[in-house]
Image 1 (cartoon, rainbow, N blue to C red):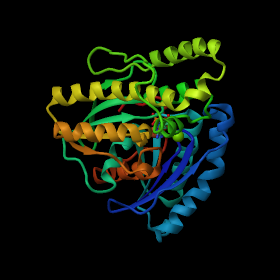
Image 2 (cartoon, helix red, strand yellow):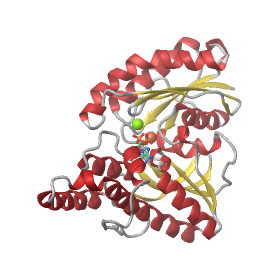
Image 3 (cartoon, rainbow, N blue to C red):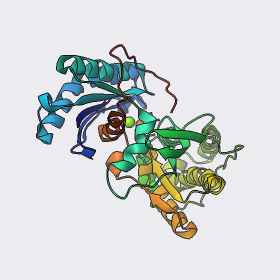
Image 4 (cartoon, protein in one colour):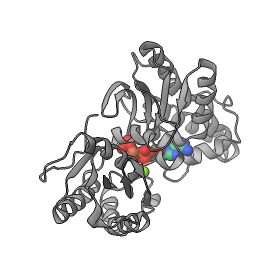
Length: 332
Ligand code: ATP
Ligand code: MG
Ligand code: FE
């Protein structure tokens, strides 16, 4: 079974080849056009996907050593994501499947973030709990089998990645600010400033409060000292990151207790955060959890995870019709 997989849900154009469940490569073109706008501009993302998709697919085919005649199926991200961005991947995959007369496999992007854990060893045992933390989502997922997942908790407003990016913007950092907060936080004191830890009912999250808290805090401080941010950047980043990580872990601990599962995983772009990785590793040691953290390249958007999900779907014969359309919102 050899599958070509394509990811185009946001601002990464990516292609990957998987053969018999083994990922051979993961070619990613990251779009830099959005930096100067402080966020992803959907129209520009769509155009950049159109420019990147053929070179990225050609590179994936070339480095895999197989040719397109040998492919058994073509997979793509159906959603959730930006409509114009998804359309590029969906249209490309359809045309490819039609031309080669091979099956088409749609993949749910959030399911794929979880299945990134099956690209390499060690792989979690079922059932496991996955905390998916990305730019658009924050979900606690109970994973019963590769394609059976249940959302047991999620954010009611902003995603945690959004909270990283928006607070970074308030600090004057460029987009995406998450990795920069991570970098400056390493030099700072997490207890220097106190930002709110919002507690929602059940296993749900809320990340919009911290953005407002940081906004007003900075406004007050800047009145006294116009250089407040530059003089305290590392401490500000460390303190913001501390609150965000605390909020994530409080609910993760509650979920593990409630579902009595010791297999715990994290996925999505924010799982690249070194503070989260460190704090979570310590917590797992202390609690006796088996913790699974993906390699950096499989945390942020990539086609290898789409390929992995597609492999599981191929085994079940779960193919899509040729009139399939992208979904900006798509449930797990
Ligand atoms: P979704 O998967 O919900 O559709 P997305 O695909 O845009 O959203 P990802 O690519 O998985 O999200 O993750 C991007 C997010 O991860 C951004 O918000 C970015 O700031 C954040 N991020 C990446 N690296 C780090 C890091 N080291 N620390 C904190 N945040 C990070
Ligand atoms: Mg991205
Ligand atoms: Fe993503």
